[in-house]
Structures are given as C-alpha cells and as structure tokens.
Length: 259
Length: 185
Image (cartoon, rainbow over all chains, first blue to last red; front, side):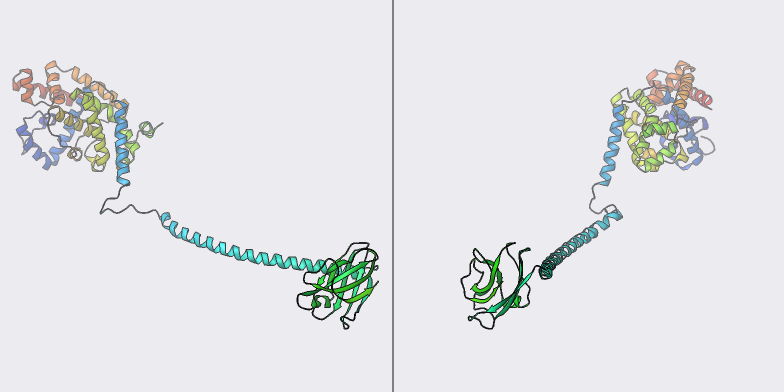
C-alpha cells in the first residue's frame, strides 16, 4: 500500500491476473472503482496481461459458430420488428401507406363514375347512330326521289278517282329503266285496320305491289317504291287492303291511272 | 467478396465497426468476428480444453457485443482487449464452475492494449513476440504465470499445485510480469 492506494504500481498486473487472494481482491477493486488513477493503471495492466492469451496455440473456430451467431442476430432483428406487444407502439407507418386507402376509394369512385359515364355515352352514341341511320335513309330516299324526278325518261301518270272515292286524287312518276316509281295521293283516312296499297299493273302478268301507305305520307309526295326494271307497265291503281297489304289486289280501287 | 472481408481489406477501425453494430448492421459484427474470433477461440480452447464449450463462449461474447455495443466506450479501452479479458473470465468461470458476471463485463471495458490488433499482420507479429517473451522466461516463471492466466489460479493455489512455497510463487510471477512489461514497453 502506498500514498493511500491499497496496491503498489508493480502489483496491478498481479491483480489483473487474479492471483491476489480472493479476500484481498474486493477492497482493492472497490478502491479502483473510485480512483481514476488506479483505474487507468489497472486498464493498462489488464492490456499487457491480456496479451498472454496469444500464447495459446492458434486455433480458428468452426465456421458453424459464425453461422449460428448471425442466425441468432437475424432472429433477434426480426423478432424485434415483427411482433407488437401490449403497451408498445407499432412502428411508424410509412407515409406512402397512408395514401393507399383514400387512393383506392378515389379509384373506385372514378371507376363507377367512368362506368356510368360510359353507359351514358354509349346510349348517346346509339341515339346518334340511330339519327345518323335515319338521316342516311332520308338522304338516300331524297336522292332517289331526285334521281327519279330529274330523269328525262321518267313519265308522269295522273291517277283519277273512282266512284268508290270520288274526291281522291294522285299521280305517279315512273322510270322503267331505273325500276323506280314515286307517287302522291290525296286520300281520306282508310277504314279501321285498312291501308292503301299501290299497284303497278304490267301489260302481261299479275299486278306488282309498290307498297302500302297511309294518306299523310302519300300526301307529302314522298312515297317511293322499287319495282322490277324494264317492266312494261300498263296502268297504276290504288286499292284498299287489310293492314299489312296483300300480294294481289283484293279491295276496291280508289285511284286509277293509265300509262 | 463479403462486406466483412471488405471491412478487413479496407481496415475499418474497430470503433467504426462498433458504430455500425449499434445500428444493427450484422455485416459489421461479422467483420469484427472475422477479425478477433481466432484469438478468442484459441484462448477459450486453451483454458477450457473443450472446443464445444469454447465455441459457446465465443458465440456468447460476440452476441453480447451485438446486444450491448452502445455501452462500449472506446475512450476507456480497446475492443480486442475487452474480448480477451472477458473470454478469459468466462472460460475460467466455466472451468471452475463459478458464476459469470455476464453483461456487466462490457461496461467494465477498461482494457488498454499496448498495441493494435486490428489487422491479421499485427496479430501475427504480436503473437510471435509473446511467444518469444514466454520462451525466454525461466521454466518456473513461465509455468507460474501460465497457471495464473490460463487456469485462473491464485498465488496460493499455484503454490499448492506446484508444491512450491508461496513466497517463491509470488516472486516467480512478479518476475514474469516484470519481463512481460519490459518486453512490451
């Protein structure tokens, strides 16, 4: 013991070796714990003594030890991340996770909106297509009328009333080359479940139907009919027929015109 | 090439590796293991004479480094110094069936090595020096200090073990320590 220290300078290595009697070690350690100078000397002595370990025969550990160590370390890492015990707070949710739910809802709403919008647009498209088809038909109809009316070889036949309907009037424009005819008729409303039917009657053979019509359509002069081309018509007539028309005239003649 | 091998080649300091261990970088732990496991295992095997038990000591020590690296204060000592001292204490405790102080040892890392052991070359060089120092000692001195270090015997136990007077044992150990100090100065 010297200068109040329970251990001499040359004894720190002996103490580090643990060679002191056990009953002396505790009071010396207690002093060292409270004396920075002795603590420093002991630290240096421990370092010199520790180098005696290098006197041991060199020996490398089996590689499995490192594998076990790293497996244990990984297991600890995963176990500290995965479970959330009672009283613990869950690890902070990444910011991008917070937008998934609202993004999914927004996507669903957008999908429904687009689906409804698509249905509406589809209906509009169908309406437009229907209107287009109507316009196309009207255009073709008008064009056909123009073609018939403008053709130099189109002939006009005046239709005269018969005793069955004395006030009836009408006319037919017929083009045998084109096999087309258009006609107008000023007729009263037909009887219930009856329609008017136009006929083209050739020199030989049976009359050919040129369509059924109601007075309003014929009055506007828009009736257009396709008949066999080159047919040698003798005269035209309008009869009253059951709704839907007939393949041959069966009802009374209300208008007649001779070519 | 593994990160541990790169760390060895790049000669990362023990402290920088320990900082990464604190951040739970297992490659840094692997690098420290590669650097010092041979020394620790050789020491534990020499004390325990049981490779299985030495493996357990080795694994437990590095696992303690992993778990409590933040407690290590490099200003108070070196990691390899602590590893060698802790490995010796644990091995002797096992050998003599004494209880180990466990985690407390890492906070008592006041082990200042007189030289660096961070590279394999430095370790080999120092290993040669220590063997030369010990082989230069008289047999009685070398035997006494090796019993104290590797068997954990006190003066009295060595005296009894060698059937030698206690005073003689104390003198031999003191002389051996003095030779060691001078050789490493």
